[in-house]
Length: 411
Ligand SMILES: [Zn+2]
Image (cartoon, rainbow, N blue to C red; front, top):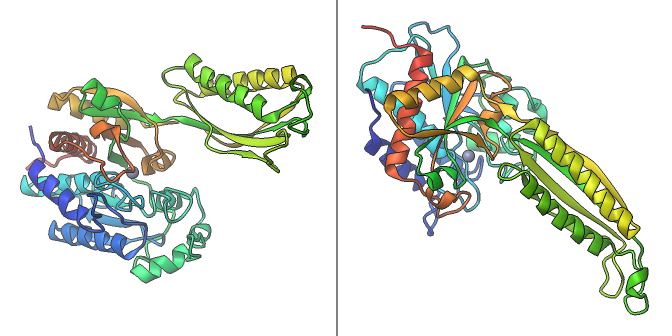
C-alpha cells in the first residue's frame, strides 16, 4: 500500500520550525508578522517546487493547487495553519499543512493523477493570539464573518488585519467567501492526552464538542467585617465558593466527557474589611452531546439557585455564547476510517476538544479530521512534541482519505 515519505515530512517540519524558532525549542510565528510571512514563503516555495500553483484570497488564506484531470470539479482540500501562539510549538497547525504537502509530494513521486484537483490551504490567524477571534481566516472563507469586519479587526498595537495583510504582501485577490470544497480533511496533533494514554496512534475525529459560556452574578449584602456576626451575613463570595464546588461536582456527574471551568472571578468594589456583596464569574461548559450539555446547564441553574436561596442571596445566570456540537460529515469520517483500516493502524473515534479551522469548514462543506498523539498531551507550549512514527502514520491516513475522495486516475 502506498505510503508517504516519513523522513521527508519530518525534515520539512524541522526546517519550518527554524522559522521563528525560539531558544527553548518552540516557535513564535504570530499571524501576519514577518515570521509568519517567512513561514508562508518557505511553504509556497516547496509547493511551487512540487508543481503546484499558489494563490491568496482577500483575507490572506493561502492556497496551493494541484490540477486534477477534471479540473473544473470542486477540489479535495487539506490544510491547517502556520501561525503559532507567542510561545508555541513545532506541530500545532504546521503538521496539518506539511502533511498535506507530503501527500502531494508522494502522489508526484508515484506518478498518480487524481480526477478532482487537490488544494492545500494555510488559514490566516487560526490561533487568535494576535487578532481575536481565533480561526479568522476560515470563518471569513466560509462567510461566517463578513470580510470588512475581519479586515478591520485590530491587534493590541491597534494594527488592522488589512494593514498587516498589505505589510506582509498577503492581501490577495481571490474572492471570499470561497468556493466550497468537495471535501476538507485536516490532520492535527490531538493537543490532549487521550490517544497517548491509550497507546493509539490515530484518532478518527467525529466532530467538535458543544460549548456554553455563561455569566454568573451573585448579589448579597455588604457589611462590616468586624461587627457583623457570621449568622447575619449574606456573603456573595462564600456563596459563589459553594457554587464553584457544586460545579466541579456537576462535572463528576457527567464524567468523563463533561468539562467545567471558571476562568474569571471578579468581586465588585472589593475591600479587605467589607463582606463581598456583588460578584461575577464566568463558566465554560463543554460536552460532545447537545442534549447532555443542555442538562448540565439546567442542573447548574437549579443547584446555583438552591445555594443562593439557602443563603438568602440572588443569583443571575445568563448565557454569553452558545455553540452547538459540530458533527463532521459521515462520508468523510468513513473515508478516514477506511484509510486507517486499510493501513492497519490501531485507531479510535474521538471528539475534538479544541477549536480548529475544520470546525468552521464543517458548516460549509463535507469535512473530517485526523488526530495523532502529542507527547504528554502537551500543546500551546514550546515543548510540544510528536513521535516521527505517529507523524508518518497520520499523513498516510490523510493520503488515502484524500485519494479515495479525489479519485485516482488509472494509467
Ligand atoms: Zn492548531
